[in-house]
Amino acid sequence: MTLSIIVAIAKNHAIGKDNKLLWYLPNDLKHFKDTTSGRTVIMGRKTFDSVGKPLPKRRNIVITRQAISIEGCEVVDSLEAAVALCKAEDEVFIVGGAEIYRQAIPLTDRIYLTIIDQDFDGDTFFPELNPDEWRETKREDFEPDEKNKYKYSFITLERR
Image (cartoon, rainbow, N blue to C red; front, side):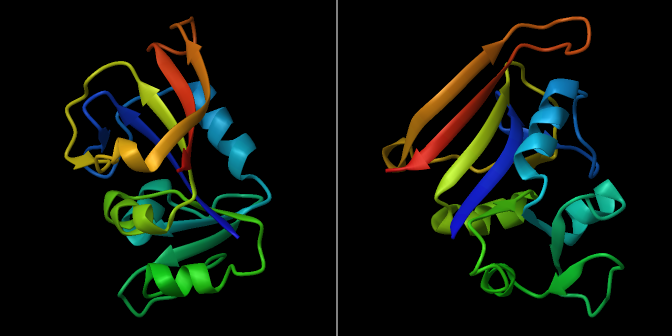
């Protein structure tokens, strides 16, 4: 199984504020949907709360220490338990939030990284990556347009 992270970050590594996204970038939302559809997504409870419902056309696993059930999702109490449910799959996606990303980085094989070429005022940040551990294998750069307000890049990183 390939464990992948998919994340959009600002230049200053901000990923959210008040449990909300900091920008509206339709092309990134489409990229996320196209990349993760038909796959399993693993997220923390706060990320699930910000989305508000299971992501369609995906197996949804939510990590929380709370003894709760969430309709349409599998609920586990740790990242390790979530990953253990997915051993037979070819690629599984970690989709947030910051604490789940932090825990997942040492286990991750690939990162689908969208970088928005601007700093944002956030309260949640993606951890710094060690450049010695990752190599860029794909990059697409985009200029702002009528629907996408910011300059951004889709980057694929593979563990060295």
